[in-house]
Length: 247
Image (cartoon, rainbow, N blue to C red; front, side, top):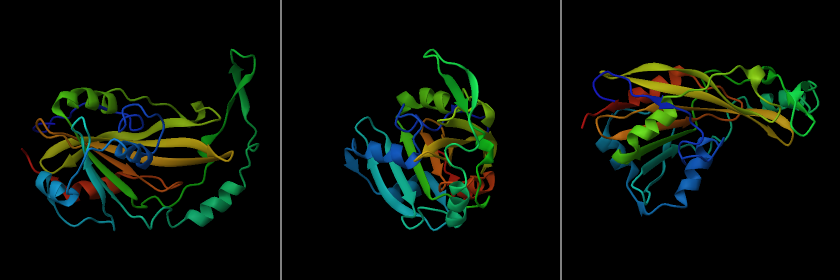
């Protein structure tokens, strides 16, 4: 991203680990740590790349490393906040949704002769709208990969209604668009990852933001607790914390 022009961007899952599928941010990043080559000072790197103010959430740098191909990764999180404040209430509501209720409806014949099943993912209970994220992951990609990364993650978004998601789950884009970032305009994508945990429907929300400046390709990934919706307001607060520092 240079000047105020938006860079193209796309999907969150499959991006951090370049095709790991529908995994939440933390899982993908932890998978990357196996391939790490060099430990780095995460706080120093953030201070070098951004103008930092006070982070609005109680997150701290948990890990920072450089991968063999040159990617630099800084992970912030709150190890105490695995679930959000509404976790117990959400679990009670989810317990009322057994794997058979609502009954999945046939949605056409599959090649194996059985019926595909749909589920109304819109019935899932949600926690507080302004729940803070519990994890941030900054990844700087090598310049040679930058254009391809941004196109894959922000350029070709697949929008579909929750009613189109199969019984087993999937990922849908729930919000995207431009955001002010200092004197620049950046772009974000927020997704909802729908899955089943022991047969019960659950969801996680994630977001990604293009923080690329000049030749320095950077993507910020955010993750919320299970059952808690993300929000543009919380993304804005993170962007206010890491103001752009041009090359």
